[in-house]
Each structure stands twice: as structure tokens, then as C-alpha cells.
Length: 168
Image 1 (cartoon, helix red, strand yellow):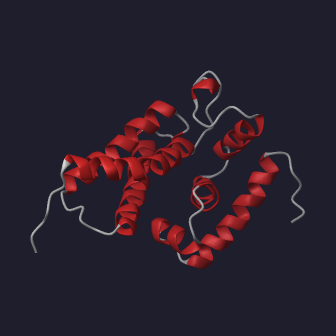
Image 2: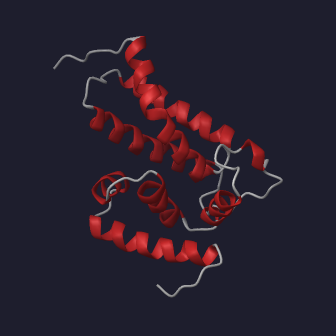
Image 3: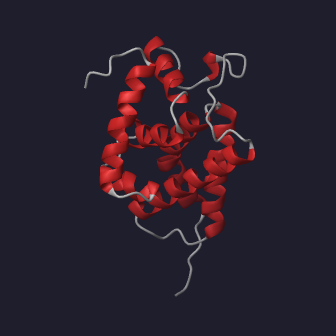
């Protein structure tokens, strides 16, 4: 099987199409804009170095998401942030964050930072990126039932962190 390499136009189109959701995922996960930009670039550098990108858009997207997850967790392990200690205002200026602007979004961001990693990640993929249960299960290497159960628990925990009741 012969590997076909990509030209600059193909790379630019793939980056334009797939970088926004990868960047959003990284930003929510690491909670720092500059780090998210660097990690997003690393995902695409690995993709270009792979060389064989003549796949379907769904295959490309799946590869990018799984690679983004691996790179993010490698970064967090290296920085000993795997506990996902939420960043304080002194760590990051709120006006530098791409999703800040509305108070509700800031509250959501802060609450996400207080959730355990598996809860944060399943909420990002299912609710923010609006992936299907099947797509989320593939990225996380979970079965679909685990995605459903974890999402339910994660949403309950998120409501509590945001000051809501646990009545559901």
C-alpha cells in the first residue's frame, strides 16, 4: 500500500475544518488559552508527520480527537495537573479566554474546572462538542453504557458545582 502525502492546500483545509473543535476541547480541558493553542498545533503537526491523510473526513476527525486527548493528558501528567485543580484568576486573565464574555459561560467554565477528569471530558464531548454517544465512546475507549452513566453523574455534579439542586 503506497502512502500519499498531503500538499499545503489539503493541510490548510483540514486545519481550517478541524482545528476549532480541537482547540475548544483543549481549552476546556487545560483551561489555559496559550497552552491550548500549543497543544492544538501539536495535534496537527503529528497529523502532517503521519503523511497518510487520504482518509474520509470522519476518519480524520476521529484520529485528531483521539490524538488531542492523548496529547492533553500527556501534558497534564507532565505538569502534574491531572487532578485538574481549577485555575484561579491570577493564573489566567478572564478576558483572554475565547469563551468568556457572558457570566453564565464563566460560571460553567469554573464549574467544569472543579469536576473530576472523566466528568469534565464526557461533558466536553457530549454537551459542548455535541458528539453522539457512539462517537464519544470511541474517543474515550468506553462502551456506550459507560458514556451514558458517566454523563448523567457528570451533569449532576456540574449542577451542584453551579449551585443547582441534585433533585434529578
